[in-house]
Length: 429
Image 1 (spheres, rainbow, N blue to C red):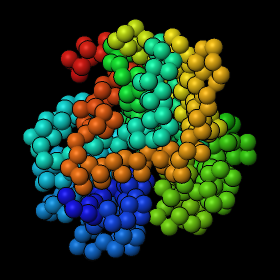
Image 2 (image 1 turned 60 degrees about the horizontal axis):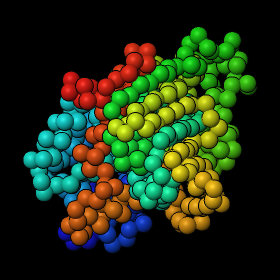
Image 3 (image 1 turned 180 degrees about the vertical axis):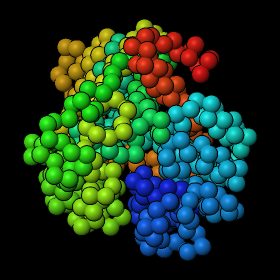
Image 4 (image 1 turned 45 degrees about the horizontal axis):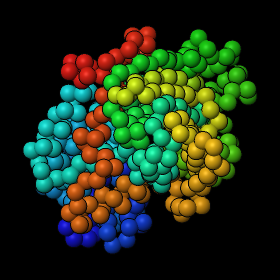
């Protein structure tokens, strides 16, 4: 293929707009030429940002997919349960697909897409498990695969969701209810199931998981709470989940301090005025104790690997910051690392500690630690040079394993922590 590779964006929300923005990082290699979104304000914004012709702007992904192929790549960044329904017609029209995770919360839909992709060998499908494309996890992969700590016996990993991110995305926001989207262990942590199995290079044989909703439910509402935070709530002052604090005044996340990443989800304008309007009229102004959420706010998952080694993974809402922590313990040493400091510490038994400062090694750590730009860069190179997938490429086949593990973990959780044999689960799921 010749540069620039053209992109059509189906779903110009946070993820779709992020992938579109990579055009400026890869000048001459990438060009956004079409957009579809249910929100006309988002379509207008994309048109203005990327100079998209009016005839290539659509009110829905379905409307876009009625047309002949408009670009080389279709970015499918619609809602979870729409992904397969948009990717399949895209494949049949000859698009290469960049597919936001998860593939689908329904395994039969995942398999349907996999079979369709096999019948379209000229098209590549890449799933956005962006952690594989970060310098952080590639450094870890090199250390583990190089035998620096011997055989890995046990791994402990944490996904620290952050209290404000949980409230935004998984209590008030789009991914609050698994009936509408996906279980949280799949939606948020299929990233982790993918990266942990990739790092070890081992297959998982069984899964067990426990967790639930500890705080975000009606019976935990403080006295004087009201359905809307701006509705005269008497508990407002002492509530850290107060919508005005999170979206307006917080030094970390509030629009008044210029840290308003989350407010860009509330309104296209992303102004103080539009934020307050959204908090008065929309779902993000709701009391976190009075929403229709059913996804967990904490969950622990244990994986037994094929060689008897173990992985313990914890996802929890109740942290100050949003980042991942990792510790691998091997027969000859240990590795400890976290994506907040972006520092990896290697301790080979009996030798001085080695420190790898990823922040000092890499210029771009924005967007999942550089994973957002990393996946786009790899995908562009694949298409421009007609290259085959590598061991780290997040193909459909590679990504399916993370979905099996995450959905088996959710089944285990719903059964009170019962161990699920993964081979049996795959056979009947």
